[in-house]
Length: 158
Image 1: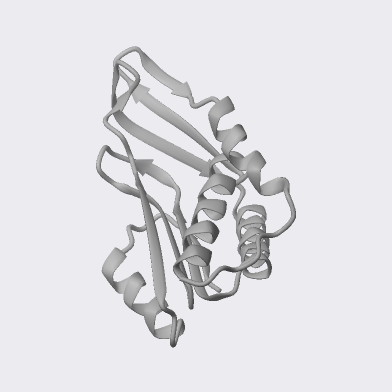
Image 2: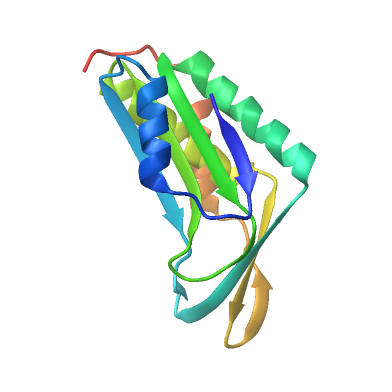
């Protein structure tokens, strides 16, 4: 398990290699990299600023990563989330899950991403030609996260 909240960019290949090593005999590794979009609907985005409460944010990310570890047979996992001023094309978040079976790795990664979108204590402000505005929560993100309220899945073979 590994959680980091940082201003600096991350190297996806290096992080993947570290999880691969930590995962030992994992048969599947799933990665998700979230990046800053250049558009918000029909408005161009010039930058995005992410704010957070440092201690609380790390604790919450560690808690949800531990929940993923409890729900799926993960050999290793990593969650990295950036904060500060970012620009279109910049990395925002990296989620990596490794498991003996691909289905567990996929489901755990989806679970972590859905939680990050709905419950992680980050606040996002997009800068557009019409000025800055705070990003509102989306009902579709809440709907995606709601599916994980059911009992933990049973790991299936690949």
